Length: 259
Image (cartoon, rainbow, N blue to C red; front, side, top):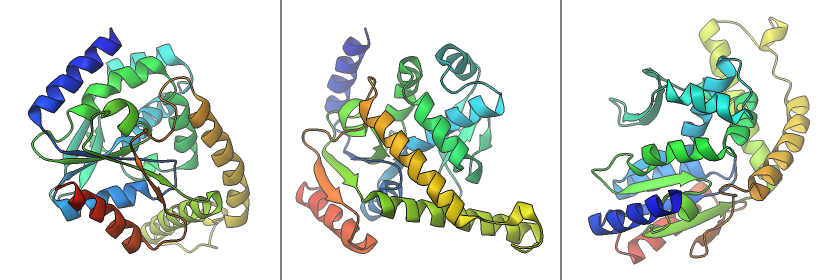
């Protein structure tokens, strides 16, 4: 049944002639930033599908549900509402039950939970529609792990972003430290005023090395929508190039396609 529905979607999508660019890649590859910037450059909408799965993980964890328990997670989803909207500042945002989600879904715990809910077949099936119908009135830059292989197999242009693991860890640490410092600033405290505000970078780095290696293995080997490049995807190594250089390279490919 799912395969038949996918064929119907492809035929309908092609008839509508909507321009879709997909950007797939592992966590920390820079795909979210690149997708956002490329969308702005092309005046397209930006779809961050990772935030949708993070919302599911957040929903499960905050309700004390095991992220690997498929039936329980699906039951939570049936009674929850996940929406994609643009803010008044033109930023694409993910809402869960009417509330916008921000830094609370960017923690290490949520990242681990996201990898677990992402392998659940029924959960992935239930989220297809919201992804495919996101921002339907304009061209779309969709980023995630299976955009070019499952969600938009007929996309006009596909990219796969890869990056050295150490670079990914450093980028993620920077994000977490910035979020940590932001929280401290809002509380009006200092990093050393209490143990709760101490950011143990070295300890977190070692922890992340293990977690990222395990997550990559799970994502690549999972039976449902494994992380891999689409056969027709353009491979982009984002380890050494500057963000501007990588973005310009991708924009060049887009303009060559008339996008």
